[in-house]
Image (cartoon, rainbow, N blue to C red):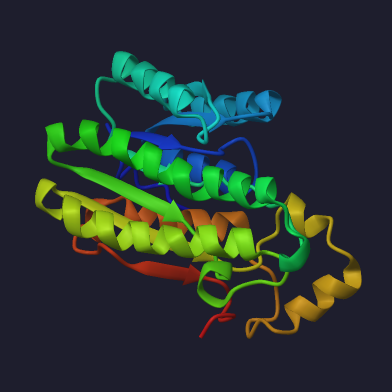
Length: 251
């Protein structure tokens, strides 16, 4: 795991950081020395535990409750960041939701909510973050997409569309922000051990695992380490890219 303090003095915001992949990313950035803003919507206790773990690593944590689908909530969150830190070095757009249904039965609200969080929220946060980053002429934005955005997924037209949209957003922002010293990349996890996969029926889990060349599900920490590396100086010449962390599932 990252322990080299390569992000000492940097400030980071991780959306959807109270559990799962977001939690692992927040902790990986903290181990590398960054102060971390822990964004969450519903799981306040989970967010407090993440913040406590970050502080135990010797870095600062601030709790940032906000629905990234709500423009006014995001305005308030970034106002808090500007007031507390004055700038932002790193943004990880991890917040997302699922609301599965067959295409022919999917309701308008199911479609809109998933895109509002996963895609609109990332655009909204990136816009605010970029305004802070250009002042320092340095920044890292990492969008957490999914192999579903590359290959599609059954009963997830909304989720797949949102995650595919993130890849376009990544490439466009990378081109636009490069002249300001800001890199923008995407990480596309495959099947990862989270609460979502833990609730999966055993037969479904086994069938999906059989499709993965490495023969197992990934761990949140394996995604987090890739994200943390993209945020370092070592990745300074990498921008506009999508890195799959999926055990070879999407080849």
